[in-house]
Image 1 (cartoon, rainbow over the protein chains, first blue to last red):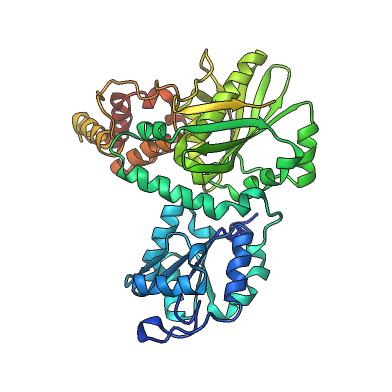
Image 2: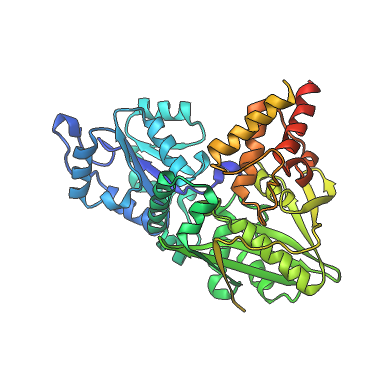
Length: 345
Length: 82
């Protein structure tokens, strides 16, 4: 999938003359514009999260949004007299969503230009396009997974967790210990396959190769005796984070090779990639095989290479953007103390 | 830039950003059983930005990042090589 076809994960709305008719601060906020409520609900149903970046008084705007029944659909709305681009920047930072995966809807060409100037990769839409947004290709999702249906609530829990972390005075590891995280790793089955596909399509930063597979190919991999294919789910005191990681290994006579290691960017700072790597080193040790890993450099995934390299892997073959690494420690890695593991068969 | 200064700047990063307590220049950073991806990226990104260098793939290794001293050596090679 090319960069410009990247799926939209987050839609950010202007308010005056976009979400509703008229200008609130001039006492003239009227009804919701045609198609707005339907579009907001449809995007939410697909697991596309939404927010607001608007120049308005926060309390007044909130009251009006509550009256319209849409307030709860918006995560960390940025309503102030600052620039729209600043609000959008803050939303994307807090949700850990890239510019490329964000859309902004505003009736004003001036505001759209301002956003486009500061955040050139954000896709901007005129308010008149509101009704048609869900029909556009960049807003399509192939399946509506259980994770998609819960996504807004999972992001909301993430925001709470973030605030708690900001208020916490110890180290990152100490904070993680307060969450009581539980990670369940289990083999991929047909029931989790749609989420597997979704993770391969949605994840760009924490994706070791960027390989994508068709639904049929994924099905084959489940049955393949030469592959070990796992998915993991994370939960903690704040609630579930859903199915957040994938590990695909190919088994040969003397080695196990990680072909895919993917972790949802929503849980980036919580040690899930490390836990999956640890799991892989233990599997290899039990099988008495070497553990190898393929890495294919993309525009976004250098973090995965660094993770491998600082976790005991060394390059053994290099061919342009493609690297084959091998785990070189004598002992398998150990799970972090802040994580409770459940391994399913 | 002298190694001493490089080392102190890296040390301050760990103390301020990572809230690391009881850290010394030769404390083994990677020995803590696991390396959180974000942590790994943060040190690499910090070093590149702070000292205006770009690390090659082979320079990102356990040997070069195992302690503040090791990171400072790596940075010094880059800075003095300019």
